[in-house]
Amino acid sequence: MTHSLTLKQSFSIIFMATLLTLIGSMGAFPNNCHATNVEGIYSGTFSGEQNGAWFLLIDDSKNGQIYFWITTKQVVDSGNVQFNSDNSFNFACTYGISGSSVINTNGKISGRWKFGNISGKLTGSRQDLDKIKALAGTYSSNCSGNETGSWNLTVSTKGSITGTVTWDKNGLVEKGNGIVDSKGTFIFLSEDDTSAKGALNPSGEINGNWNNPFWETKGTFGNTPHLINSNKATSTKNEKLPVYVESDDEKGCFIQAVVPF
Image (cartoon, rainbow, N blue to C red; front, top):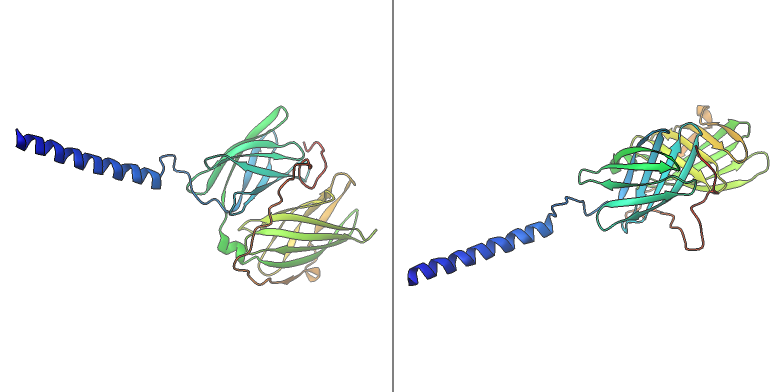
């Protein structure tokens, strides 16, 4: 009898120890498999009744900024990202695009977007930071179209872009922000609603299209190689991502409300 009781007690101790180990393992590796660190640059495409490219920047505090390039209109819609308790998030942009997505442990993103009565899917992935670091620097180029001017874009080692557009006609200088992915494709939006999508590479070349729907102006930049120069930026070890966070008395981001589709 005593021997049987001892075996039961031993079994109970082993069972409890195993159970506690399993619980600890579940805490370290949750069964929902969500990644704990989502900081970085993501990019992909969206499809449906409209299509184009989207870019996402997330800092170490899970502040996020998302940019959509609408192919048919050649304009950018931009907005903030709000994370839920897991690694799913919602987004709402100034022009009216909204939706939700989730970041998987492999860095892939899947979700849906909508605008009024139309909707579709979006997919994408985390970008290679080493390739983005190789693109860091300041890129300058003249632009042409029904307005002329000059662009100056500075790419950080973490993929965020700050820059200016200066117009020849009136000397207006527009400030703006954007994102570049590991392929060198970038999206940029100025505070006066000038949208741009283009490509750059480590040698300093830059090209793309720009458009301002409010002024009804558009054109290209970077078509003449001798107008292009690059001044590589020095990497900053603790560089922060400049995520634009909307304040309570603001509606949306830089741009005014307008129908993008």
